[in-house]
Length: 488
Image (cartoon, rainbow, N blue to C red):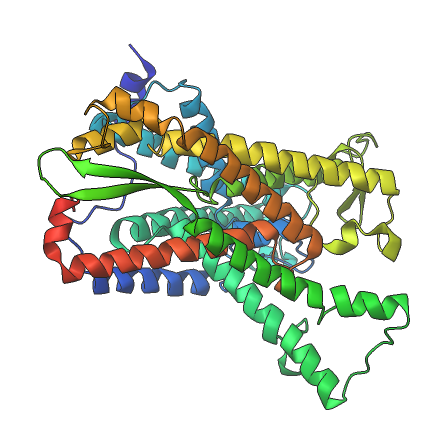
């Protein structure tokens, strides 16, 4: 008996959002998407009951990628979903599961296993945050009022975090089945857009904790804030990398432009219908063929490594210095320091006097970050292409089933596959490396609102694909016959 026979009764009964029985009108899809987005923003402002003062965000600067909100019901954001996807992709990519995603029965098992892994990751990430290190300390007043003690309040906090993690999973499923795009992508766009708007217009005069670029320059022009002299090093630094700095603004605009341009760069393979004369088409192999989503896997993996480091630091009093050194909760040395990505210009520009490490240590950290992003981007892009049925074999089968063929070649799946192998693997690797390089450079130069390079890349790419999907949906609504032709 295989593991599938043993696990089938459990995996096939995992709770799931029902699929629509018929075509969902475009307006209704927009309604579901907007409703889930409003619910997401609402939940990110629902604070955890029973948490005392002094809570810390254990994910730190990874928060813009993982979404959610510190000290709220969505404490974990999309972290459990992404981490479970990493594990599942590695298992499926190594053919350790023995699941055929083209088989309807195996598809149910795959989806059930993914949900089970997500619930497991919610527990694995939530329990240490609540019970180790004091990152979400229990409020003594609540413990006294309920009469359950500090441990009882912590279990209450964990129950809220678990419920929030499960809600994110099902909200993602609702958007994927009933809305436009995916819930994970929608939550990334929502969180990053919120930070970008804050980075532009936030003003302490209206209660904000930081100052945005537009607000900063408005105060300068109004004469309510002095400008440091450009004849000094601090003045040049403030102009380039300060609150109203030019470099973060230019970097953000460049990332927008480069990603939109890269999304439009493609190799188009001509196709013709085998039976309908004159029916022609093209199969586009985009430069960013695997999309930017595999970058989430790399950064989420790094976030989990730093998560483990901070937990070890809080629980292991005799942790060796070579493993990690922490000051005020921030890693400043050891292995975990070198594995921590660069998040801002101040972390690597030692000549500005903002870094306490030696130049060679900073350069090693930059080199490791760059290597992990380039190699990891290529590897996870390959895994993504294979598991998402975008590889040469799956693509050839889809073209064959649609009745199309490549002019000048025999109508045979193996022949089409060999043609696709000339383009897809190479473009996948090149696109993954390019996205990894852009993500590191954006982090090193800084962006508006302190948004990480990876999350900015994800936002632009997901928004572009969302625009394409909305345009396609509108086209299908205008011409219902096209939906039948494309299998809708």
